[in-house]
Length: 193
Image (cartoon, rainbow, N blue to C red; front, side, top):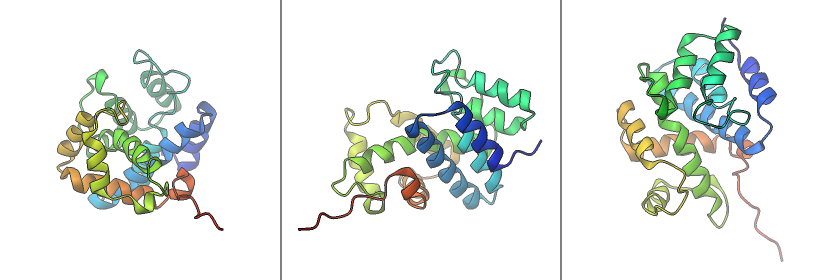
């Protein structure tokens, strides 16, 4: 089976109702597409993988179940093993080796998208368009900021991809800027009067 984006969207929205989880899926999809372009890989395949990587999380948020329940559903639907292995590999606690570039990219962008959203939401204009790498790196050092985001996973992911950390952050910011409206990160209009 060669899933389409429509298949992935249907699967995601059947299992995920939380708007923030859907926005996370969209952010990861955009970042995966950017990396597919960078590496000359299959943009559709990589984007779909990003879109569905957490589709089971809302219903199965524990480490015992996520993403294994989702992987089983994908297997039953006949999705490609390359996608299933990447989905499993993004959960560090499963110790599934990330053997493909796509699996490495998924792991690398997953946590970083969350940090970028958090950095954007504390900006005065709440716009990802004004977010710079140096702003992310400044917040990076504050361990109490977005404490649920594993900086170690982001660093490990960038290293596995062979991309400098600052460049990695820039690539993901730019990818997310391309869908700022969908992510709710286009910013606030200045107040008149």
